[in-house]
Length: 482
Image (tube, rainbow, N blue to C red; front, top):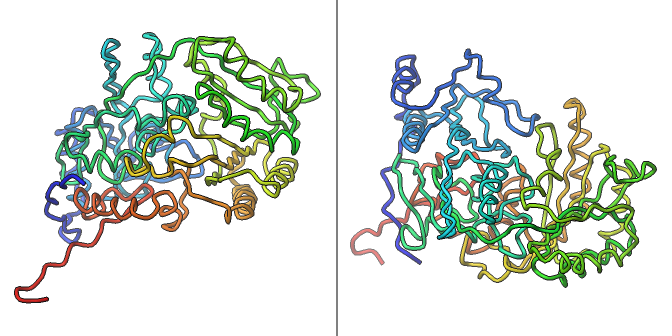
């Protein structure tokens, strides 16, 4: 383990000073970006996040223009004892605060791509779709998630499971270095060569250690792909066959099965609209379209597709298929990882998909493996390298008044399968308590993260996340003691 930087002097919360109008005026004068207050016209829009069930009202929003602004905002929050929320794409449920300070990174959208070296320098306000579209102009891509509207910062820091996971691994497997503002306002670089323990921690450990103001990513050749969706019937035979067929597929093929009401798309027969189906979305990351079609053949053999859309497309076009799910709205999510899809779980899925609390409820199955699994489990803070299957429940709905109904339905569904969990992906966690956080970071991973946390954020300023509290200070021995 690389040596940690000495911990900065802990900030004393008792020494925090109340925020005065003069303090705010000073902050406004010191940043290049924008400071938004509750009486400003832009306030209500600026405080909203993707999950509209979360309606929090910060006392200040700092829309940073650069790393120096980020450092000033972090220091201001610490000096005045303000709860600090960090917002990039706004999909995180933790990117809002009541009464605290929101550090908004959405204006930091700088991107430089070096196609010869296959490297990209990206600021945290970019979305996965914006970055992917720019990289595609060079026939290149970095693995991100499955939805283009998600901010690349939070997605990356939690690991990053998406359409290229079997071919090119997690997002963090393409991360070369980060520039990061620590809790004491320092701007540091972390990579395999510099501050290596911090670099280990940010690859999967989330926003616990600072605010990343620049990422350096590797790029991979990804041009025209075979992408789209097969619509299969919801039967025991189809569900039982999904996992073994997906695992046996070439690594170029990554699939996500959405078990849901069939959307009323033009190529789907009208009598199937809103009926349950397995919407098997996929990316075959190769310009060999014939090979992609061959890789899909075993899925088509599970059952005659009800409908399909499988055609060559530029890689960013796959995000068009999930654009609807990227829109803001209320929703409930639960997830876990599984070793298998057994008969009991299959029966449960079939029962639930035919009696959802909301017509838009989704059961999602992602078969993993491939490049993601070849990285040692202790190489990064993402410890579930051997996970076979990611199982997620996503229940979006329209009327916030109905939230208790959908929360109860989703939780009950989750509880029926929770005993089979082999872990959880931190980016898919809601606010579910420390035990679940420890499922995301099992055993020695959690303990190592607490040590890094103590070194870089000993007072837990960065606590609005899947929080890892700092390890207690090492007790000093008294002279002569045993």
